[in-house]
Length: 161
Length: 161
DNA sequence: CTAACCGCTTGCACTTTACAAGCGGTATGG
DNA sequence: CCATACCGCTTGTAAAGTGCAAGCGGTTAG
Picture 1 (cartoon, helix red, strand yellow):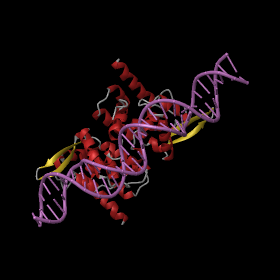
Picture 2: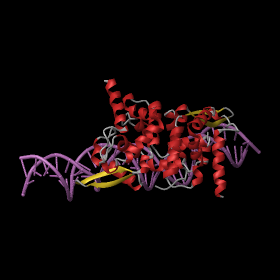
Picture 3: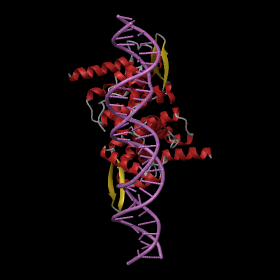
Protein backbone atom coordinates (compact mmCIF):
# COMPACT_ATOMS: atom_id res chain seq x y z
CA UNK A 1 0.00 0.00 0.00
CA UNK A 2 1.38 3.38 -0.95
CA UNK A 3 2.02 6.09 1.61
CA UNK A 4 -0.67 8.76 1.43
CA UNK A 5 0.91 11.22 3.86
CA UNK A 6 3.47 11.38 6.65
CA UNK A 7 0.96 12.26 9.35
CA UNK A 8 1.49 9.73 12.16
CA UNK A 9 -2.22 9.10 12.54
CA UNK A 10 -2.48 8.39 8.83
CA UNK A 11 0.55 6.12 8.94
CA UNK A 12 -1.05 4.19 11.79
CA UNK A 13 -4.29 3.88 9.86
CA UNK A 14 -2.46 2.68 6.78
CA UNK A 15 -0.85 -0.19 8.63
CA UNK A 16 -3.62 -1.06 11.12
CA UNK A 17 -6.75 0.36 9.51
CA UNK A 18 -8.36 -2.80 8.23
CA UNK A 19 -10.96 -5.15 9.65
CA UNK A 20 -8.61 -7.66 11.24
CA UNK A 21 -5.09 -6.48 12.15
CA UNK A 22 -6.05 -4.94 15.50
CA UNK A 23 -8.33 -7.85 16.35
CA UNK A 24 -5.55 -10.40 15.78
CA UNK A 25 -3.14 -8.33 17.90
CA UNK A 26 -5.82 -8.06 20.59
CA UNK A 27 -6.13 -11.87 20.69
CA UNK A 28 -2.37 -12.25 21.03
CA UNK A 29 -2.23 -9.60 23.78
CA UNK A 30 -5.23 -10.42 25.91
CA UNK A 31 -5.82 -14.05 24.94
CA UNK A 32 -2.13 -15.02 24.80
CA UNK A 33 -2.82 -16.95 21.58
CA UNK A 34 0.42 -17.92 19.90
CA UNK A 35 -0.37 -20.36 17.08
CA UNK A 36 -2.45 -20.26 13.92
CA UNK A 37 -4.81 -22.85 15.37
CA UNK A 38 -5.35 -20.89 18.58
CA UNK A 39 -5.94 -17.66 16.69
CA UNK A 40 -8.38 -19.33 14.32
CA UNK A 41 -10.19 -21.57 16.78
CA UNK A 42 -10.57 -19.10 19.62
CA UNK A 43 -11.45 -16.08 17.51
CA UNK A 44 -14.58 -14.45 18.88
CA UNK A 45 -15.27 -12.99 15.48
CA UNK A 46 -14.65 -16.12 13.42
CA UNK A 47 -11.80 -15.08 11.16
CA UNK A 48 -11.53 -16.99 7.87
CA UNK A 49 -8.40 -19.09 7.34
CA UNK A 50 -7.15 -17.20 4.30
CA UNK A 51 -7.69 -13.83 5.99
CA UNK A 52 -5.82 -14.98 9.09
CA UNK A 53 -2.92 -16.21 6.96
CA UNK A 54 -2.84 -12.90 5.07
CA UNK A 55 -2.95 -10.86 8.29
CA UNK A 56 -0.15 -12.90 9.86
CA UNK A 57 2.00 -12.27 6.76
CA UNK A 58 1.15 -8.59 6.90
CA UNK A 59 1.82 -8.24 10.62
CA UNK A 60 5.12 -10.07 10.24
CA UNK A 61 6.17 -7.97 7.23
CA UNK A 62 5.34 -4.80 9.18
CA UNK A 63 7.29 -5.96 12.22
CA UNK A 64 4.40 -6.43 14.65
CA UNK A 65 5.00 -10.14 15.17
CA UNK A 66 7.77 -12.65 14.63
CA UNK A 67 7.36 -16.27 13.62
CA UNK A 68 9.42 -19.25 14.82
CA UNK A 69 9.04 -23.02 14.56
CA UNK A 70 8.15 -24.83 17.77
CA UNK A 71 11.27 -26.92 18.59
CA UNK A 72 9.13 -29.74 20.03
CA UNK A 73 6.62 -29.77 17.19
CA UNK A 74 8.13 -28.94 13.83
CA UNK A 75 5.02 -28.13 11.89
CA UNK A 76 3.75 -25.75 14.55
CA UNK A 77 4.61 -22.07 14.19
CA UNK A 78 4.78 -19.87 17.27
CA UNK A 79 4.05 -16.21 16.75
CA UNK A 80 5.36 -13.62 19.21
CA UNK A 81 4.57 -9.95 19.70
CA UNK A 82 7.40 -7.52 19.02
CA UNK A 83 7.96 -4.29 20.92
CA UNK A 84 6.21 -2.45 18.09
CA UNK A 85 3.03 -4.39 18.85
CA UNK A 86 3.43 -4.29 22.63
CA UNK A 87 3.65 -0.50 22.37
CA UNK A 88 0.08 -0.57 21.07
CA UNK A 89 -1.28 -1.43 24.54
CA UNK A 90 -2.17 2.23 25.27
CA UNK A 91 -3.98 2.40 21.93
CA UNK A 92 -5.92 -0.77 22.78
CA UNK A 93 -6.82 0.65 26.19
CA UNK A 94 -7.97 3.97 24.73
CA UNK A 95 -9.94 2.26 21.97
CA UNK A 96 -11.45 -0.28 24.35
CA UNK A 97 -12.45 2.35 26.87
CA UNK A 98 -14.03 4.43 24.12
CA UNK A 99 -15.84 1.37 22.79
CA UNK A 100 -17.21 0.49 26.22
CA UNK A 101 -18.60 3.99 26.60
CA UNK A 102 -19.90 4.74 23.10
CA UNK A 103 -20.56 1.46 21.31
CA UNK A 104 -23.52 -0.50 22.66
CA UNK A 105 -22.51 -4.02 23.71
CA UNK A 106 -23.05 -6.74 26.24
CA UNK A 107 -21.26 -5.41 29.33
CA UNK A 108 -19.47 -8.69 30.10
CA UNK A 109 -17.04 -8.28 27.27
CA UNK A 110 -16.01 -4.90 28.60
CA UNK A 111 -14.36 -6.21 31.76
CA UNK A 112 -10.76 -6.42 30.50
CA UNK A 113 -10.78 -2.91 29.08
CA UNK A 114 -12.38 -1.44 32.17
CA UNK A 115 -9.88 -3.20 34.43
CA UNK A 116 -6.94 -1.95 32.41
CA UNK A 117 -8.36 1.55 32.25
CA UNK A 118 -8.91 1.66 36.00
CA UNK A 119 -5.39 0.39 36.59
CA UNK A 120 -4.04 3.44 34.81
CA UNK A 121 -0.62 3.85 33.20
CA UNK A 122 1.11 1.75 35.88
CA UNK A 123 -1.02 -1.30 35.18
CA UNK A 124 -0.57 -0.83 31.45
CA UNK A 125 3.20 -0.70 31.95
CA UNK A 126 3.12 -3.85 34.06
CA UNK A 127 1.07 -5.60 31.40
CA UNK A 128 3.50 -4.50 28.69
CA UNK A 129 6.46 -5.77 30.74
CA UNK A 130 4.68 -9.09 31.05
CA UNK A 131 4.05 -9.29 27.31
CA UNK A 132 7.77 -8.83 26.68
CA UNK A 133 8.49 -12.02 28.63
CA UNK A 134 6.02 -14.14 26.71
CA UNK A 135 8.30 -14.32 23.70
CA UNK A 136 8.45 -17.62 21.83
CA UNK A 137 5.37 -18.85 23.58
CA UNK A 138 6.78 -19.00 27.08
CA UNK A 139 4.04 -20.00 29.53
CA UNK A 140 2.31 -17.13 31.31
CA UNK A 141 3.06 -16.93 35.06
CA UNK A 142 0.17 -18.07 37.24
CA UNK A 143 0.04 -14.72 39.01
CA UNK A 144 0.01 -12.08 36.29
CA UNK A 145 -1.70 -8.96 35.05
CA UNK A 146 -3.19 -11.03 32.27
CA UNK A 147 -4.62 -13.47 34.83
CA UNK A 148 -6.01 -10.50 36.75
CA UNK A 149 -7.70 -9.18 33.61
CA UNK A 150 -9.12 -12.59 32.79
CA UNK A 151 -10.35 -13.01 36.36
CA UNK A 152 -12.15 -9.67 36.06
CA UNK A 153 -13.74 -10.99 32.89
CA UNK A 154 -14.79 -14.28 34.48
CA UNK A 155 -16.28 -12.44 37.45
CA UNK A 156 -18.27 -10.21 35.15
CA UNK A 157 -19.57 -13.23 33.23
CA UNK A 158 -20.51 -15.06 36.45
CA UNK A 159 -22.36 -12.02 37.80
CA UNK A 160 -24.56 -11.99 34.74
CA UNK A 161 -25.29 -15.71 35.08
CA UNK B 1 -22.04 -4.28 8.49
CA UNK B 2 -22.99 -7.07 10.81
CA UNK B 3 -21.73 -7.27 14.37
CA UNK B 4 -19.00 -9.88 14.69
CA UNK B 5 -18.67 -9.79 18.46
CA UNK B 6 -19.44 -7.60 21.46
CA UNK B 7 -15.81 -6.99 22.37
CA UNK B 8 -15.38 -3.21 22.64
CA UNK B 9 -12.17 -3.24 20.63
CA UNK B 10 -13.89 -5.18 17.87
CA UNK B 11 -16.88 -2.82 17.95
CA UNK B 12 -14.51 0.13 17.59
CA UNK B 13 -12.75 -1.55 14.68
CA UNK B 14 -16.06 -2.30 13.01
CA UNK B 15 -17.10 1.34 13.00
CA UNK B 16 -13.69 3.03 12.52
CA UNK B 17 -11.59 0.31 10.92
CA UNK B 18 -11.50 1.51 7.34
CA UNK B 19 -9.05 3.63 5.39
CA UNK B 20 -10.76 6.99 5.89
CA UNK B 21 -13.04 7.39 8.93
CA UNK B 22 -10.29 8.22 11.42
CA UNK B 23 -8.51 10.47 8.92
CA UNK B 24 -11.65 12.55 8.32
CA UNK B 25 -12.24 12.86 12.07
CA UNK B 26 -8.59 13.86 12.52
CA UNK B 27 -9.05 16.68 9.98
CA UNK B 28 -12.15 17.92 11.78
CA UNK B 29 -10.39 17.76 15.17
CA UNK B 30 -6.96 19.15 14.41
CA UNK B 31 -7.67 21.08 11.21
CA UNK B 32 -11.04 22.45 12.31
CA UNK B 33 -12.44 21.65 8.86
CA UNK B 34 -16.21 21.93 8.83
CA UNK B 35 -17.43 21.76 5.23
CA UNK B 36 -17.20 19.25 2.42
CA UNK B 37 -15.01 21.66 0.44
CA UNK B 38 -12.57 22.15 3.31
CA UNK B 39 -12.36 18.43 3.99
CA UNK B 40 -11.80 17.65 0.32
CA UNK B 41 -9.49 20.54 -0.56
CA UNK B 42 -7.27 20.44 2.50
CA UNK B 43 -6.96 16.68 2.77
CA UNK B 44 -3.30 15.74 3.08
CA UNK B 45 -4.09 12.33 1.69
CA UNK B 46 -6.27 13.44 -1.23
CA UNK B 47 -9.59 11.81 -0.51
CA UNK B 48 -11.84 11.15 -3.51
CA UNK B 49 -15.18 12.97 -3.61
CA UNK B 50 -17.34 9.86 -3.60
CA UNK B 51 -15.37 8.35 -0.72
CA UNK B 52 -15.65 11.56 1.29
CA UNK B 53 -19.41 11.67 0.71
CA UNK B 54 -19.74 8.04 1.75
CA UNK B 55 -17.64 8.56 4.89
CA UNK B 56 -19.64 11.64 5.90
CA UNK B 57 -22.85 9.60 5.54
CA UNK B 58 -21.34 6.80 7.56
CA UNK B 59 -20.00 9.08 10.31
CA UNK B 60 -23.35 10.85 10.53
CA UNK B 61 -25.29 7.56 10.64
CA UNK B 62 -23.00 6.31 13.40
CA UNK B 63 -23.39 9.50 15.41
CA UNK B 64 -19.85 10.84 15.10
CA UNK B 65 -20.85 14.03 13.33
CA UNK B 66 -23.97 16.09 12.77
CA UNK B 67 -24.85 18.03 9.66
CA UNK B 68 -26.61 21.40 9.50
CA UNK B 69 -27.19 23.93 6.74
CA UNK B 70 -25.22 27.17 7.03
CA UNK B 71 -27.88 29.84 7.73
CA UNK B 72 -25.95 32.45 5.71
CA UNK B 73 -25.26 30.18 2.77
CA UNK B 74 -28.03 27.71 2.06
CA UNK B 75 -26.15 25.23 -0.10
CA UNK B 76 -23.29 24.92 2.34
CA UNK B 77 -23.43 22.15 4.92
CA UNK B 78 -21.61 22.55 8.21
CA UNK B 79 -20.49 19.35 9.89
CA UNK B 80 -19.87 19.27 13.63
CA UNK B 81 -18.22 16.74 15.90
CA UNK B 82 -20.46 15.07 18.45
CA UNK B 83 -19.37 14.02 21.92
CA UNK B 84 -18.89 10.50 20.58
CA UNK B 85 -16.21 11.79 18.21
CA UNK B 86 -14.67 14.24 20.68
CA UNK B 87 -14.21 11.32 23.08
CA UNK B 88 -11.85 9.82 20.52
CA UNK B 89 -9.18 12.44 21.33
CA UNK B 90 -7.32 10.04 23.69
CA UNK B 91 -7.38 7.39 20.96
CA UNK B 92 -5.96 9.89 18.46
CA UNK B 93 -3.24 10.88 20.92
CA UNK B 94 -2.31 7.26 21.65
CA UNK B 95 -2.35 6.33 17.97
CA UNK B 96 -0.40 9.45 16.97
CA UNK B 97 2.21 8.92 19.67
CA UNK B 98 2.62 5.33 18.64
CA UNK B 99 2.91 6.34 14.98
CA UNK B 100 5.57 8.92 15.77
CA UNK B 101 7.60 6.30 17.56
CA UNK B 102 7.14 3.27 15.37
CA UNK B 103 6.19 4.39 11.88
CA UNK B 104 8.95 6.14 9.95
CA UNK B 105 7.89 9.61 8.81
CA UNK B 106 9.04 13.15 8.27
CA UNK B 107 9.31 14.50 11.82
CA UNK B 108 7.53 17.77 11.04
CA UNK B 109 4.16 16.13 10.83
CA UNK B 110 4.59 14.69 14.26
CA UNK B 111 4.52 18.00 16.09
CA UNK B 112 0.81 18.09 16.97
CA UNK B 113 0.81 14.58 18.38
CA UNK B 114 3.98 15.15 20.36
CA UNK B 115 2.64 18.41 21.78
CA UNK B 116 -0.60 16.75 22.83
CA UNK B 117 1.22 13.78 24.29
CA UNK B 118 3.54 16.01 26.32
CA UNK B 119 0.59 18.03 27.56
CA UNK B 120 -0.82 14.88 29.13
CA UNK B 121 -4.41 14.21 30.11
CA UNK B 122 -4.98 17.82 31.20
CA UNK B 123 -4.13 19.23 27.78
CA UNK B 124 -6.25 16.57 26.10
CA UNK B 125 -9.17 17.54 28.35
CA UNK B 126 -8.70 21.23 27.52
CA UNK B 127 -8.63 20.40 23.84
CA UNK B 128 -11.80 18.31 24.14
CA UNK B 129 -13.55 21.15 25.98
CA UNK B 130 -12.56 23.45 23.16
CA UNK B 131 -13.91 21.08 20.53
CA UNK B 132 -17.26 21.06 22.30
CA UNK B 133 -17.57 24.81 21.76
CA UNK B 134 -16.84 24.65 18.04
CA UNK B 135 -20.30 23.27 17.31
CA UNK B 136 -22.00 24.53 14.16
CA UNK B 137 -18.77 25.98 12.88
CA UNK B 138 -18.29 28.64 15.53
CA UNK B 139 -14.96 30.40 14.98
CA UNK B 140 -12.02 29.11 16.99
CA UNK B 141 -10.79 31.50 19.69
CA UNK B 142 -7.48 33.20 18.83
CA UNK B 143 -5.85 31.82 21.97
CA UNK B 144 -6.62 28.12 22.05
CA UNK B 145 -5.16 24.67 22.47
CA UNK B 146 -5.68 24.12 18.76
CA UNK B 147 -3.70 27.30 18.01
CA UNK B 148 -0.98 26.06 20.34
CA UNK B 149 -0.82 22.73 18.53
CA UNK B 150 -0.68 24.44 15.15
CA UNK B 151 2.03 26.81 16.40
CA UNK B 152 4.06 23.80 17.49
CA UNK B 153 3.61 22.40 14.00
CA UNK B 154 4.64 25.68 12.30
CA UNK B 155 7.71 25.90 14.52
CA UNK B 156 8.71 22.38 13.62
CA UNK B 157 8.30 23.13 9.91
CA UNK B 158 10.33 26.36 10.20
CA UNK B 159 13.12 24.57 12.03
CA UNK B 160 13.48 22.15 9.17
CA UNK B 161 13.58 24.98 6.59
C1' DC C 1 -27.05 37.05 -17.28
C1' DT C 2 -23.08 34.60 -16.64
C1' DA C 3 -19.60 32.42 -14.29
C1' DA C 4 -17.93 30.44 -10.31
C1' DC C 5 -19.06 27.73 -6.36
C1' DC C 6 -21.75 24.17 -3.52
C1' DG C 7 -22.13 19.28 -2.26
C1' DC C 8 -22.31 15.77 -4.12
C1' DT C 9 -23.57 11.41 -7.98
C1' DT C 10 -22.39 8.21 -11.69
C1' DG C 11 -19.72 4.86 -14.17
C1' DC C 12 -16.04 1.89 -14.28
C1' DA C 13 -11.78 -0.54 -12.90
C1' DC C 14 -9.30 -2.42 -9.31
C1' DT C 15 -8.42 -4.22 -4.62
C1' DT C 16 -9.81 -6.23 -0.38
C1' DT C 17 -12.74 -9.19 2.25
C1' DA C 18 -15.53 -13.36 2.83
C1' DC C 19 -17.03 -18.20 2.65
C1' DA C 20 -16.24 -23.06 1.58
C1' DA C 21 -13.50 -26.69 0.22
C1' DG C 22 -9.35 -29.02 0.14
C1' DC C 23 -4.06 -30.02 0.19
C1' DG C 24 0.71 -31.65 1.43
C1' DG C 25 3.19 -32.70 5.21
C1' DT C 26 3.58 -34.18 10.42
C1' DA C 27 2.70 -36.34 14.72
C1' DT C 28 0.02 -40.09 17.16
C1' DG C 29 -2.35 -44.40 18.60
C1' DG C 30 -2.81 -49.13 17.87
C1' DC D 1 3.53 -49.53 9.79
C1' DC D 2 -0.57 -47.85 8.78
C1' DA D 3 -4.83 -45.29 9.55
C1' DT D 4 -6.35 -41.09 11.56
C1' DA D 5 -6.22 -36.72 13.26
C1' DC D 6 -3.73 -32.47 13.38
C1' DC D 7 -0.75 -28.62 11.32
C1' DG D 8 -0.70 -24.31 8.75
C1' DC D 9 -2.16 -22.91 5.26
C1' DT D 10 -3.91 -22.40 -0.48
C1' DT D 11 -7.40 -22.16 -4.03
C1' DG D 12 -11.72 -20.79 -6.24
C1' DT D 13 -15.39 -17.81 -6.43
C1' DA D 14 -18.39 -14.12 -5.09
C1' DA D 15 -19.40 -9.82 -2.80
C1' DA D 16 -18.05 -5.53 -0.83
C1' DG D 17 -15.03 -1.61 -0.48
C1' DT D 18 -11.80 1.76 -2.67
C1' DG D 19 -9.99 4.86 -6.33
C1' DC D 20 -10.18 7.85 -10.37
C1' DA D 21 -12.38 10.99 -13.68
C1' DA D 22 -16.24 13.25 -15.29
C1' DG D 23 -20.27 15.66 -14.65
C1' DC D 24 -24.92 17.44 -12.54
C1' DG D 25 -28.63 20.33 -10.38
C1' DG D 26 -29.06 24.10 -7.61
C1' DT D 27 -27.00 28.61 -5.34
C1' DT D 28 -24.56 32.64 -4.99
C1' DA D 29 -21.52 36.58 -6.63
C1' DG D 30 -20.40 40.02 -9.91
